[in-house]
Image (cartoon, rainbow over all chains, first blue to last red; front, side, top):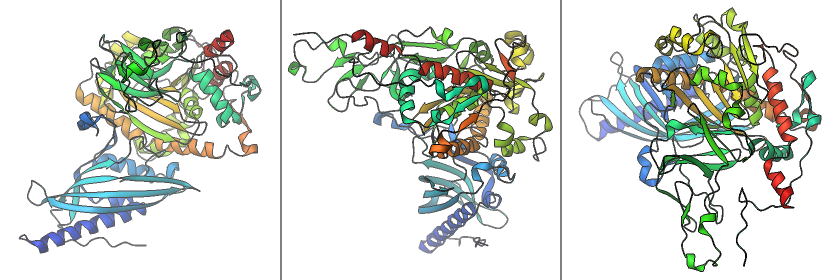
Amino acid sequence: MSIHIPEPAVAETGSGADADIRLHFEVQRLYAGEAQLLDQHRYADWLELFTDDLHYWAPVRTNRLRRQQALADGAPGEVAIFDETKASLAWRIRRFDSGMAWAEDPPSRSRHLITNVMVRDAEEPGEYVAESAFLCYRNRLEREVDLYAGGRTDLLRRDPDDGRLLIARRTILLDQNVLLAKNISTFL
Amino acid sequence: MTATPVRPTDRLAGVPRPSVDVSAYFDLDHGLVDRTIFSDQALYQQELRRVFAPSWLFLAHESQFAKPGDFFTTYMGEDPVIVAMGRDRRLRAFLNACRHRGMRVCRADAGATKAFTCSYHGWSYDTSGKLVNVPNQGDYPDHFEQERWGLVEVARLDSYKGLVFATWNPGAPPLVEALGGMTWYMDAMLDRDPEGTEVVGGVHKWVLEGNWKLAAEQFASDWYHVNISHASALMVMSPTGKGPKSEIVQTPGRQYADPLGHGHGFPTHPKSRFDDRVVHAHYDYEALRERLGDARVEGPMTTGHATVFPNFSYLPVNGSIRVWHPKGPDRMEVWAWTLVDRSMPDDVKDAQRLYNLRTFGPTGIFEQDDGENWSEVQATAHGFVSGSMTLNYQMGLGLEAEDGVHPGTTGRLYTDGAARGLYARWRDLMNTPAWHEKDEKDAA
């Protein structure tokens, strides 16, 4: 089985509607390809989509009084669902190669759906902020079903060698308070 | 006209609920447990009445409350409670239910407030639980006594080295007595530094489709599962990245079984260490030996596991402290905090936080596999035959002894000793009428 990896593409210089459409299409393809890698459990390939200085972060979401909404999403340095570097993600992924990661043996069936993509220029020239919504359906063993839904905000940057878009920062806001699953044994 | 009757728990006598003698589910002298205790609905209801309601239960860490008005909402058994610091800076805990119709009066996880005002009819309570405002009060009868309708408060609340516990049981022994011999072991985590501990902001909360005792028992008594259940994590963490070292598979160690149902297993190692390098480098082990003694530094401070009966557990090396909230016989909710020493520099606290969330919690490389075990144990417990099968708790049977190093009775690291102790305590509480049942008898 193979998937189509987006070919290296360099956005056309200059601005205008054409460039916007090309960029948007490129990001959409990046995310569709990423989702396919995750659903096929190709985590080592998935890791190649990130820069070496990656910060991959999913804070905890809390219920707060309306006047204290600023505190509703966990702050940096607090307990988090993920708070990862590329090295720590690699560490997590190595576990799956052991042949003894029982939470995924037999493997789950999953489908990452990525939608509502919005791309804008970041402060640094040549970097982009991409927002997206995700719905990850996991079906496991006989009848276990988990739904992980939320939003992601990525900082995208081009690989200096081949020009492809890489993910340098990812913030994941999972739309749950108590995580309604026994674990998260995939990535979002 | 008669005044509202005063009752210690603000409960009417009600109809006594039937309780069963659970002795037949156990033969602990021979290490046998009937699996019915993990899935039976009636036993679960009895457990809420006779195990959870009378026991000291973990609520929160003192560091979650800095100033008057700070609050945190949690559960005691299935009872929702608010823990709040009053204007007098005292911590109190109340049922999170309005005295009028039972509406949850606080729907935030944590925060700061002057009052808890019910969003149903507007009864309002101050941070010490006192009812301070009742809309349309003129329409209540003359004998309505506002001071009697404060939030239902726990009978006792106390803390042990930062950990806040409470109980509904007015006849409960003092907290330190209820912890008993366990405090010597707990201090290996709670008393490493004169300034004590604090928790990192935020709480991991997630659901597990398993009976709460599966988790409480494992943390009390089960090093055995580590080598198999967590084989993938051990492999990742081994120096070569290829597989666990042989000394991990045959780890020497001891397991403490407390007569009050608590348990703590720990490898013994002359060079006690934290798995995270930064945290390991932070500690002055000579000073720790002086403070806590060699036996604790080389024992319960290592990569051990522990449960304070009934449902508070911790992992000293990870700084993970957690409570297993019961949610019916087939489900629990895990609430987990990260504990650090207050005096640690920020980079060390952060290293501990990251190590903990990468190993434990719902995405942790260890804990992912625990969730799979418990949910599949529970999923196979619902048949008549499978649900009443006898389970084997015989490991280490007859090998418990006083070893002259660790206080109380200990066994080998690989033993079901603390699990047998936990179930003996559970059985005894299940078979003993709780204080509220005695009230009912007295009232009758």
